Length: 223
Image (tube, rainbow, N blue to C red; front, side, top):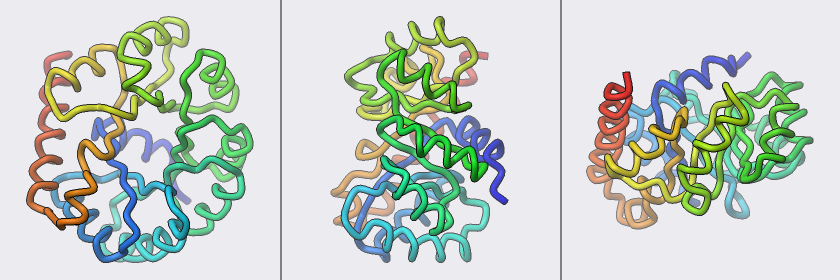
């Protein structure tokens, strides 16, 4: 049984949740190996195209065999049907751009970590009613760090993770953590389409190490 508290704490400790999608299994495996070797122990594979479930299923088998301490979640889980399918494919956790109460209820029934996307106080309130520990603020570049600072006052103790437009820079990442986030989600700014298409694994390794170091430094300054 997957321990959702362990996964949550791994995301908080790591400070970043990398996410990407690509339709070539071999390219995905190399990207995941690179992220893993750079220090990543929890990440998200997004369900953003037809055939994503089949790709995920194949990758999941190799991850389980090769990187046993990597928590490998499924993202863009917008419907109950998708949640059931990816749970059967052995997803460790779910991430979504939206708040679907059926997905949240199913996740609770399965004792799985679910990270729904919210952009209003009303959605955050509903998510809390489903005992959601970590909420994805999306799209973060539209809402901004000030939004998180404000809603944290209204929802004390709630954990937030902005996703969408988080930049690889000390200034940008520090702004989010200063606002009180638990972690940041990073997709194309970290794992760009060009990196995947060109198989630029050294660049991906360096970017990942840079992000992890920035987050470590930012957290230490807040202590």
